[in-house]
Structures are given as structure tokens and as C-alpha cells.
Length: 66
Image 1: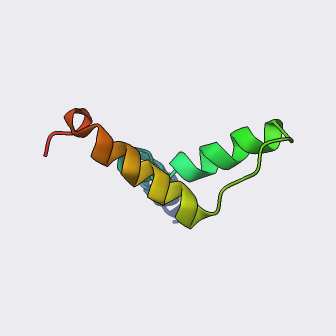
Image 2 (image 1 turned 180 degrees about the vertical axis):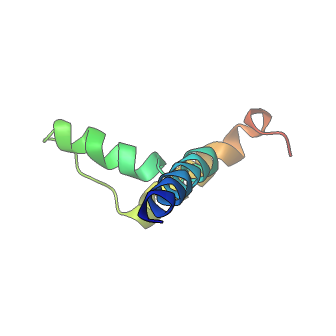
């Protein structure tokens, strides 16, 4: 039984990772990691990051399907 739980847990973890990648949820996490490697760069808040990201999308509407 515990083996089945482990398989289900790994499968759910993989699905969760995939959904976060496809939806762009991990973009901020990657941005923060990048800024931490370059200590002189100020890390934007999540709100600032998402605002800039949305502004970029609005300026370049050809990047999306709808």
C-alpha cells in the first residue's frame, strides 16, 4: 500500500510541476534565483514583477494566441 502512495505522490508532484511551468507560475521563482546570483540587482516584489510582465505582454500581443 505504501508503494502505491509513493507512486501517486510522485505522479501528483510531476503534474503540479508541469502545471506551474506551463502557466508561468515559476517565472518569478526563476527571476528571484537569477537576481540572487547577481547581488547588485534589486529584487522586485511579486506584484512589481507581475505588473512588468503584464506590461510586456500588452506591448507585444503577437506573443500569445488570444
